[in-house]
Length: 134
Image (cartoon, rainbow, N blue to C red; front, side):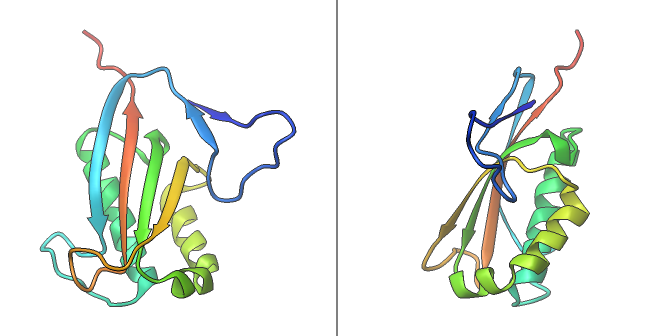
């Protein structure tokens, strides 16, 4: 996996502009919200929901044998732009604790609502794992 940064571009903060992958096994992870394994929200707050949603992404990825550094793309859908902007430092700390310094290609979209109430954020991801030897 190679991070793509065109010549003369400033390094992005907290994401990659693009990722070049010699494809192995593709893992597509559906949108994960901040509920636990029993589909119960333990918090209405953005940061704990983000942490749980990211843990959920990583748990699904682990089921395929993947690790955080295999994630090549992630999209976040958030219902609270002011809350997100105010919590950026805390969200970054959660990211680094769970993902390390690995930053995939990412998009963040602010939306009016999410299906699973009281979800404040939803994360979906694509990962590329090494091929399984024949």
